[in-house]
Length: 146
Image 1 (tube, rainbow, N blue to C red):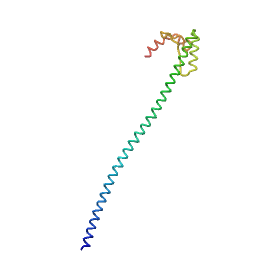
Image 2 (cartoon, helix red, strand yellow; image 1 turned 60 degrees about the vertical axis):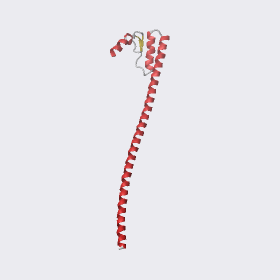
Image 3 (cartoon, one colour; image 1 turned 90 degrees about the vertical axis):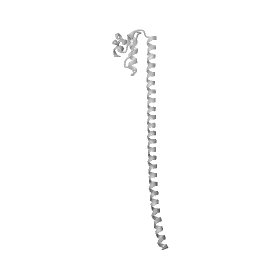
Image 4 (cartoon, rainbow, N blue to C red; image 1 turned 120 degrees about the vertical axis):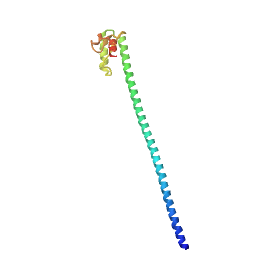
């Protein structure tokens, strides 16, 4: 009888322990799944932010360099125009010589498609377009275009 009692108690305890281990295993699996999913979400979010920041920093560097190159281009053009204006005002007073300087500027500097020397009323004195633009009034043309 004692032996039967021990066997019954042992089998009940084994079933109880098995059920507990199964419950513990299920609970651990659920907890670990939640942790792994949360960790995955956090890692995806962090990697997305890092990638976006990296791309934005690269674009910012590209834009900064392009802006500095454009600024340099405008500075060089402004220096060329100032030098030409100084040359025209100081040395050459005849319109055909001024046209020669303007044509040379346009031919040697591809950034300029045409150049003109204007008086205070915006009437062309000399132009790189030989003989054509001298009769133009750039003030009227600017009003028509706007």
